[in-house]
Amino acid sequence: MLTLYGQELRSRLLLGTARYPSPASLEDAVRSSATEVVTVSLRRETAGGKQGGGFFELIRALGVRVLPNTAGCHSVSEAVLTAKMAREVFDTNWIKLEVIGHQDTLQPDVFGLVEAARILSAEGFEVFPYTTDDLVVGEHLVEAGCRVLMPWCAPIGSAKGPQNISALRAMRAHFPDMPLIVDAGIGRPSHATAVMELGFDAVLLNTAVAGAAKPALMASAFARAIDAGRDALEAGMLEPRDFAVPSTPVIGKAVFA
Amino acid sequence: MRALIKGAGVVGLAFAHELTARGVEVTVAERQPDFGGAASWFAGGMLAPWCERESAEEPVLTRGIAAIDWWDRALPGEVSRNGTLVVAPPRDAGELKRFASRTSGFEWLDAEAVTALEPALAGRFREALFFPGEAHLDPRRALSLLRQKLVESGVALIGETDSDGGYDLIADCRGAARISSTAGLRGVRGEMLYLQSDEVELSRPVRLIHPRIPLYIVPRGNGLFMCGATMIESDDGGPITVRSLMELLNAAYALHPAFGEARLLETGTGVRPAFADNLPHINRAGNTIALNGLYRHGFLLSPALAEEAADLALAWNLKGDAA
Image 1 (cartoon, helix red, strand yellow):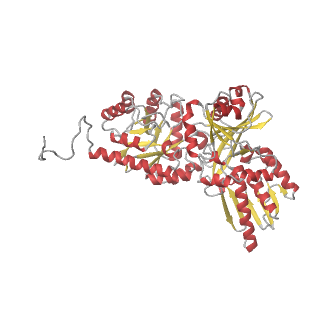
Image 2: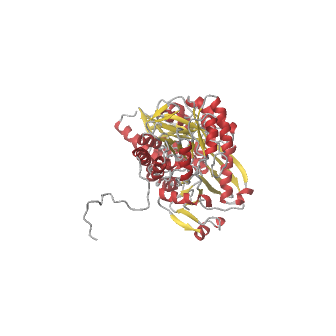
């Protein structure tokens, strides 16, 4: 069981809601992955619509927990304002905090991130910060009030998979009791399995599913890959070694030499 | 048989055309003059079913293919059958492969072949996808000409009427105006702009692959270019935002730096009506039939939708259960 800010979850997959061919295909992906948390980007134009956003109604109708995000925000004030609007729209204190520092790489502005996390935590938000794999930034985020950390494993939407396994491993070791969710950079199910085997608690995905030719099938593939990685971690994996080890003992066999 | 069609956007006019062709006496009611409020006024006018399949369901391709011939028959000489060119900036070159893996009906072009098709793009793209079967038209000309043709063939155009009496069939083709009163219908905002440049010449729509927005530039002739379109989950029809304007202008500039000197003639916003599957639907209640949810495929899917609805309506009428 995964616990995020006191909320117990069976599924270790968090799914983004952007860029699906249609809301209907998004719903299919949510169902087939059995995810219990979806993230939704709150753009001001969307919230400003006359009907309060037909898309948001569809998201609410999915019946899963909504983790609004501040995607596309480039400053602390913009992210804080967006978070407050999200709280109104979705009636939740959860916020996936993104403060983007660079337009091309979508790399988080970790200084702004820590500042925004501190402001939002003080106002009662439960902050899920999209961060790098830097340990000191992670410490500052925890000190600012975050009880979940969400490091990237590669740039957003890059589909490259884990680029720095050592840093992810170090992060797991450094924050043994903090829920760690890999957010961004996952391209295929084997990437998700790999980070789950490292001991990460969950994986957040969007493009890898939304951009697949069959999003619902890909969502289910990811759900199984994440379970496989988690099960392997709990089962206990062998450490690699340099020499072969026979799986059948040789002692007692006839030796012809 | 007498039919009243509410709404004179692309769906209403295409349906009027199909009903007229079947001998129905048609009246079209439109509250706003000069296509005000119609999402189709802001359309790209691309008849691009193969490209659209990249992010749309299969029916958009299978039902969209017939649109090219339909428009050619309805408005002879208005359809340009020059195909579609799809290019990517160097940093998104990998995305071109993804686009190819989701679509069909294209050929890969090298730099030389791109130059042969569009000399203005010489040396700018190392590779591109070319969809030779696709076509485009000028949506504003097409709407005006189709309306004129309908009037000439006896269709009555009136302002919106409260009276639904005396008609055998009422067709609701009011699109986004029905969002608040149609279950499951939502708005998807689209912003576009018109540029004027005498330095760039293109003879077909060019799509620029972009990580967030499917951007395209469609030549309208005489140095006029339409550049669109954003896709924002909202029914806000207010003016274009600075961010969207920057994204669209950046795309034009990335396609050709000479667009830096172009004049920005117009910006526009339309609200596309869409159902959850982003596909159009025909709904019937008594003798009222509603055609809606064309999303970003008004010119592409109106012909197939109008034909299907006209066949259905006549079948009901023959059985005597519509009137």
